[in-house]
Image (cartoon, rainbow, N blue to C red):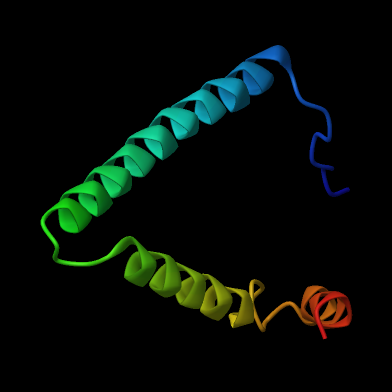
Length: 86
């Protein structure tokens, strides 16, 4: 007989998940701070304007929305994604 995988989670797993989320929040904050610092330096020195930055960010954001988020090898997920985002 084949053994079934354990479905539940224990307290240690949950604690690990919360710790990982906390770590990710710190990394996200540091990355956001680094980007804001670069934008401030570039605009204050006249290398780019805030409008140029904003337009480029919006363009890149629109481009990222066009990229598929799921692997092609998973047809059921890919189909559901296509139905949600025609």
